[in-house]
Image (tube, rainbow, N blue to C red):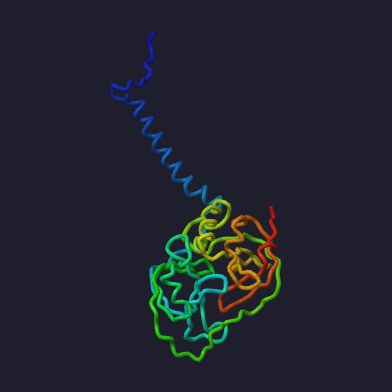
Length: 252
């Protein structure tokens, strides 16, 4: 009677050929499985946002400290009326509002250098630099009052403009709650991410009844499902949602 020899691993001896082949195929299979899961699982959980980063560049415009957040008003050469200007929200290169070296030039025409992040109609620049420019010659008046689009009850969540525009992915949802709270508490613009009746995604800058930022009053409601009833305003290409933060209603 013959006895079958079963391969056996001994740590101080060479690995038997049968076990060596098994280990090679096991490592290869696990590597392929890991690669597949790293692609499939995030896609199933909707972790990839459409936000994207543009190359570092310079933009010029009128530096403003509101409504609702630091922003720069950029003239459009061919625009008229509402379309005569675009607005880009501002943050620092960290989880903070732009530094004093930028904001002490509020009300002046400036050149800003930094990274631009975009998601849909939302554009945010991360910058720590600002140089003063001469005011351009233009017959287009600088808009100061937004146009009211009406009062609506909107459902969505509070996000920070910086991460949602592409700095981090995901930039929304409960998985991003901790980071969003840090950004908003540091002065990064607080936005409301919602959808209109046609299913189109909208991002509105949150302001109170006076047009001031609401950051320090919404930290306990960031990245959670909410309903906000307020007045939707349009200022050039920027949408705002004006409402008393104490009236925000949780949907949990």
